[in-house]
Image (tube, rainbow, N blue to C red; front, side, top):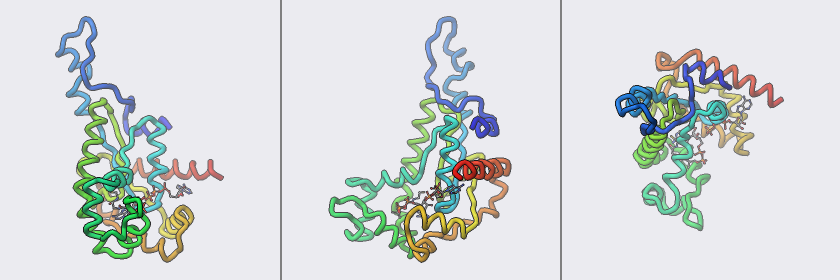
Length: 234
Ligand SMILES: CC(C)(COP(=O)(O)OP(=O)(O)OC[C@H]1O[C@@H](n2cnc3c(N)ncnc32)[C@H](O)[C@@H]1O)[C@@H](O)C(=O)NCCC(=O)NCCS
Ligand SMILES: Nc1ncnc2c1ncn2[C@@H]1O[C@H](COP(=O)(O)OP(=O)(O)OP(=O)(O)O)[C@@H](O)[C@H]1O
């Protein structure tokens, strides 16, 4: 999997501290030239990964992870901001009622999913309530990785364009599959009916209008790797 990082022109995806290390024979200015705070900051690349539900984003992010690239997963962040006792969960419970809570006070994801995936207005409401929490958590995750001195990270975020985060990322990888295959994968993975799966195939901002933002070589690479992955699974 070194090919992913090689294609991105990344020499070493691993993280090293940005704080200058004391070593004999180098004064502070030399530490900076040798890769101190400024150099690491400038060279941190954020690769964006997006695509529809069950398109295969996690499969692609695993390829990066296995190359040593740290991954920030927006779905995990989105779960953290509605944990029991968080301001995010309080806002959602006020807006959607206690019906979306389990008996133990945690969020009933499947119930909330049924509500928002079948009603665009409610989905927008949920997005509006959670977006500030999700964005700020993602920001702090990125800062933590920057402090560690990471040269490249991957941000896996389904609503990348909707959240207007594309301007911070280069390159951007869109994972795309044929909608019928996507439907099948979703039904099998989540064990849901075709009717329910269809409600989750939400029309998204049109990728092709943003083609200039995408890196063709990476899309091809990802398709090839996914195909290779499929062969390995057979
Ligand atoms: C509605 C919720 C409770 C359903 O939870 P569930 O565990 O069933 O699904 P999960 O969170 O794993 O999401 C699965 C996939 O659904 C799609 N999806 C999730 N939320 C949205 C949304 N608001 N709009 C469009 N697609 C979405 C994404 O492709 C995501 O990868 C949950 O998705 C949620 O809280 N969504 C709102 C937060 C959000 O915007 N998440 C996306 C991260 S940017
Ligand atoms: N190349 C492939 N061939 C066959 N099945 C695949 C392939 N890639 C992924 N899958 C399967 O498709 C399903 C969806 O993939 P995955 O979970 O990676 O999608 P995702 O985009 O991360 O989903 P979500 O949007 O829900 O987070 C999974 O069951 C996965 O095992």
